[in-house]
Length: 318
Image (cartoon, rainbow, N blue to C red; front, side):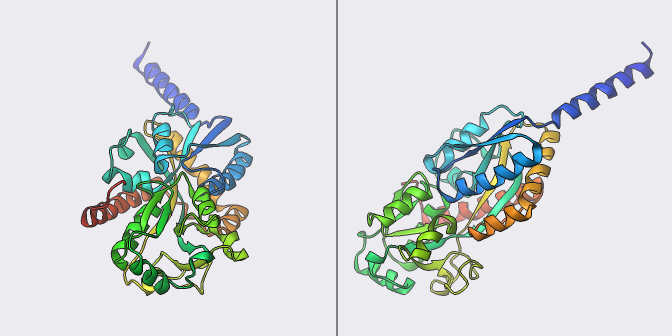
């Protein structure tokens, strides 16, 4: 065989391999680290529907709740890197938990960023039975009853956990942390009167705010949220307080680059679809699709930010 024919054969094989690598499976599973009925679950289902339609594929949701989303992240870290399994990742396991506990995976080595999904503030809500109608009233009550009130989270090391600990620190109060397996169970506990405070997503708490079953006190961004423009931020009472939340799409770490690029392309396309954008925005989940590199840099920046907060405040996984 001549050198020319050998090189041509190698080139043809490489082209064929690349083409195969870019073909997405006809069944894709999106793993979600929280219980059905919460914001992450809702976001994943909205995107999955459009993604499936665009690809002519079956896209299903697998809720693997527990450990603040870490169980789901570990499952995807160990999944086949063939595009059949992706993750709706969250700030907790990707940027917070690694600084608080030993995980069964390395977020930087075992997971590959695809695209940011949604970036949004949470809303601090309480049940009407607590008898407070403003953030200063909540702080005053908590100071009168140290260690009596409780706040819920979607798990140790989650965004809602850190928001609560930051609130305790900045407000000078002691509200006890109670972890749950997702936003929906936490809100159910609020409605039942067994939980006093929760930093909720608007997707989960919105209907109950509208019905008057939950009282919104503040949102957690530095500026007022577009979905509750008349509600003050926590920062208006506790200057500098911010604890935004986000969900991002992630693949197993060893997924080939051409397949990662294809997944990014299709997920961005789905997120930019008008009906997906509108549905997520109505739920208070602000779509923020972008490149793989943008997401990687964002996760690194968030990780550095939360590492400092955790060290400075001596926050633990309890």
